[in-house]
Length: 272
Ligand code: FE2
Image (cartoon, rainbow, N blue to C red; front, top):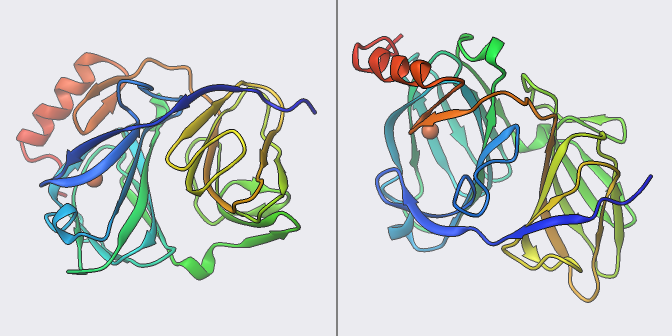
């Protein structure tokens, strides 16, 4: 299998969201608007509570899924349908907004490091109005594949016959890769899928800490380390190839559908 060349390297931009949470927007910003089927990738990471304590008070979503992967910290999640969940170290919350939810994401901790990712995964046109759903995935439920090069946590999809617990509505592979020094790791990816690798700790040979690499469409992805270890958040997915129209927290296929989402939200149709 050919090794995919890197197509683009992205740094992300510092921004704030929610009630004033400082974060880095890597996908969904000016450098990379989206990487079909991924609409957004944020990294939040700070040991200063001022950067996160305000959290994300109640806000709506429609038309996609949010996958929150918490590396460090304790956050609580609540929504309009009565779901409640706790995100702790190494856990994942997978929220399928479908036709609409209103939720809040608030830190429980008042000090210490809060660090993780939120990835937005688009829903295909046929599933944008499905019932909202949640998967709260404890860190123990995420399988770890041990390799000579390090360890691969399989959050979702199939990595060398190990299946991750996160269930998506469109085919994806989501991995948290911990690489040793002087190592080489090959990740098989279906041809035609889009894939990115974000180095959040250490350095990969071609990608420095805080950089995201987007790869060409065919072949395997290969990571190499030299003197440093590296931790890489990788997501790959089959592109939907459908029109994407965003309106704040709503992502639909047409402008009319986005306006309808605002109207339904204002008319209280997201409450139950
Ligand atoms: Fe949200």
